[in-house]
Amino acid sequence: MTTDTQPDRSRRRRRTTDDGRRTLTAGHALVIAGLALAIGTLLNAQGLHKAAYNQPAGTERDVALALTGPLATVSHALLLDRPRKLLQAALGRSGDDSIDTTVVIPPSSTAPPGKRKPISDARRPAFSPARPLRLWIAGDSLVIVPGLSILRAAGRAIKPVGNGPDGHVATGLERPDVFNWFTHIADELRRLKPNAVVFGVGGNDDHGYMTGLPKGVQIGGFGSPSWTAEYRRRVGGVMDTVAGAHAFLVWLGLPITSDPAQTQRFDTINAIVQQEAAKRPGSVAYVDTYETFASDTGGFAQYLTTAGGDKVLARAPDGVHFEPAGGDIIARLVLHRLNQAFDLTTWRKRTAG
Image (cartoon, rainbow, N blue to C red):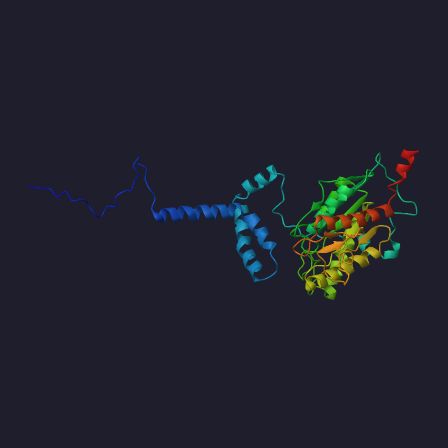
């Protein structure tokens, strides 16, 4: 009697490699990839949620928040956000995922301008190489190149504090959730104790969306009375924070750009800053970069003519930022303002004598 030796086709043969290891089917690989993606998403849910929060107002932001909010909650509940926090702590970046919309405004910002006491009285404070003026430079991307020029041109009576120009790209006073200048300025003033601050933001504030609004406050579009009132409050708050730390503030205005519409929006911001600076004589100096970088006909100029008759490339190809030669022009304006507020040269006469 013969036995049927045909294989049982109902059984699925295991797939193995030449060395005996079992291979995965395409289905298994997709499941594993899906699980890895899900775990990775939960591990980074806090960062994804902050990135969603930082998006411009609109449908995409609303959808992103609706998706990442629950993920962040689940990640925290399961302690899956711990590895990310530990890594950030090791890199010195604790708090990167926190969403801080606190707008700190000193009480003096609401006081009548006439009652504010200038930090510089009739006699200018004197500084020398033995006792240099401590200078902190900070702001958005428009401050970085001029800041480097100021550092190069600063005399022996000026000592920069901090790590070079404290520049934070794509930041401003509208969105403290992206970067909170209000708390950062207060923290750095306490830490660095500068005598003077060169500061400038606004290039990213030409929009109608703000975070950190006081409870119950709503604003209209960019340039509207309600938007202007809130932005004015924030500008004045920064100025009073610096003055409250007994430091002199030089605020860099926004320049003319190659885009007429953007230039018009920058004008709106400049007007607010200039008006607030004028309320605080002796405490704040406003540096106008609009007129400085305009052409002879009042329009945008990529190149400027120096006093010696040479043409220099002053503006970057994007039509907004500065080239080093443009930064040098601003540096001269800033140092002039600092010399008006402080005695930075008398020490030379004493040394020569």
